[in-house]
Image (cartoon, rainbow, N blue to C red):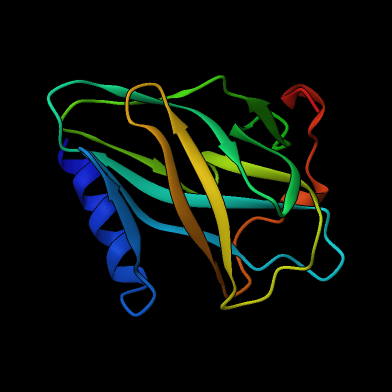
Length: 160
């Protein structure tokens, strides 16, 4: 638990002026963000922390946004040859009293088929769908460019 809390604290301290989120029941969404993708990119990744203050686990099972043709949970892995690949995840468990982090190089929300250019400072509407908490409206902040370029990765194992 302590490493997760440390990572969450680091996430919050990394962008104190840009931190934002939403609370829905026992679920708190912490700084949903998308690093600004390159001009013309057709894909981008979304990150956040999800805290569950309740005494029952929940599960993130879907994502919707008008800025992409599809949005889904992905897990990045690196094979023995150093090639990064992604696989679709059907859901992400949020333990009771715990936190799940969506971060570069790990679990993230993959936005594929971007329908518009995303620019730094823009707020991108989305709906996170949980098994228990239901539909939670959030806004992803488009942060400065950086992080992993998901537009050039192998998505063949990700179901799209």
